Image (cartoon, rainbow, N blue to C red):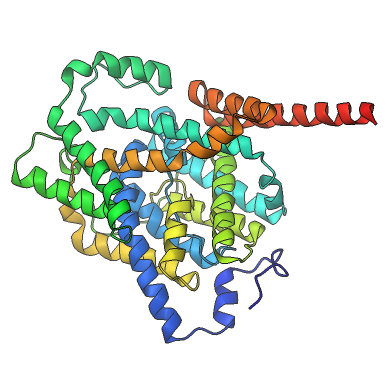
Length: 426
């Protein structure tokens, strides 16, 4: 069977290719089970990522349902699963705080248009050339910042005022609120994280995140634990998708949001192509990078129009899709259908989900996201370590875009310096 190398430059969704190769009942059953498996993982994770991003939990589900369906249906990767991602938490949260929910939708829509333009211009290959040290640096920086954003819910803290966005002021504010620590919330969140880690060791094929959230919800309800829940903060989730909504788009607003949209575009392109590359390494196939970016762009446009947040290819869910036996993009589309069925049938049950339990889920996400071994390995290479620390440090103290741009600039300067030394030596 061809690995897709010859057709890597085509603007043709992999769904069409997979179906044209022949698709029968056996492949359908495998895709169905893979889609169900990924949906079980995506259900608690989508809500947790939305809450951590400063929006209500249904926004994460809208993103996985609308955006995830289109990423699989139109994308250039056979196994990519799209949805909200931990890497976007900081950008989404900052955008909501600064411009409001409608401003977020406009920003995501703009980034979707930009992603389509990048893919249509055949620039997808350039994103692949971002230095590895930059990728590791911003990924580890994001993991730490996400963890800091979850301390509030994990410990049930009550800060005196609004929680600052930047890391150092945030930690200072949370430190000042330690006297309000809710021990029961901390125990519940830590227990969920410990259960997920334990099940990954003892029963790796069990849906640890979903099991942890369900058990925590039952415990909080049965024992009347004094912890905040989705219901107490957000109310009941809607049973279905919202109607189409076009955000306010004026020239002045577009200019105001453009820098944020660029950040979403850069991160979305990097994350989606990294995820597709992981899928390639697991399946010995080759994705169509430009088609993938076009699909990611369309998915973000649709997500914004239906009340969702930023969409990208997700490494963990894509890997789970492959391990579950997926054969085609239909598995990713089915994962979205299963999530929609959950909203239609069981959305009212989410009011019992404790927020410390979702914080425990994201604690695991942070641990898995941080490329600890790669970080340690790069420290032994001085040029790579300089790029790594530049990206990592600026991601922590400034923002993601600053970290990536500065890391790439340092890497380029080092490359030029090495080239000049080599030319002088010859």
